[in-house]
Amino acid sequence: MTPLHDRIRRDLEREILAGTRAPGSRIPVEHELMAEYGCSRMTVSKALAALAADGFIERRKRAGSFVTRPRVHSMVLDIPDLAVEVRNRGQAYAFRLEARTVRAADPTDPVATEIARGGALLHLSGTHLADGAPLAIEDRLVALVAVPEAEAADFAQTSPGAWLLEHVAWTEAESRIAAMGADGASARQLGVATGTACLAIERRTWRGGEPITYVRQLFIGAAYDLSARFGPAAR
Image (cartoon, rainbow, N blue to C red; front, side, top):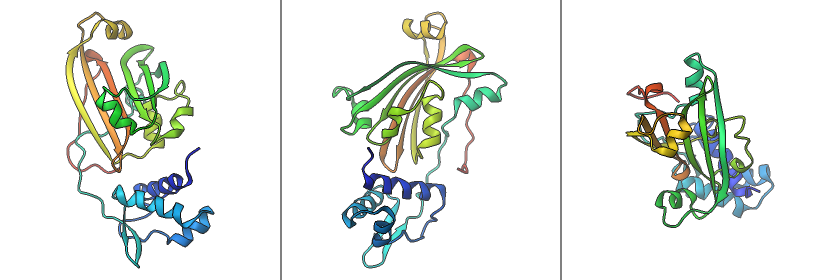
């Protein structure tokens, strides 16, 4: 069960990211939040401290807590929803979940350790399909400390990426893109010859400094291209 202080933090965070609480606006004072959630001052204080640490609010002595001005930050690449992209091409989209486990981070793996933050990881592997044919394979880690509800999500119906875009607001993302030939295992999963030209994309996302997910996707090069619109993007 999600701790109450974490639920308070997430509720306020979602409102801030959605623009319901504008920069400079005042967050309800502690006794108002205590009455709304039926909790102690310590619980509310812990939630507000986490929001302040992640840069969402500024706590002013004797004045209260206020939504901070957004940092100037431009994303060169947004995070695409593959289902939408495939359907926009006039093709039928599907996601086939191949494996699903909950595990601890391998201490020798710095990426998994950073994503886990001392908690468990949801490890997902699957294949994205366009008109029934493989388009890309995916290997993903989700931090259950940050997104505990992901453990019960039905990824047989919705791809992990689409589910995360719908349920978890992200504030920062990092992408790494490379061209490579498919190795034997990847080629078999994609249904292509070993060495076929592919596009590899690795991406990590954060919410106010809190790691959310790491994903590695391998696309068949002839079936997918990557485009980006430069400049400020409205979200």
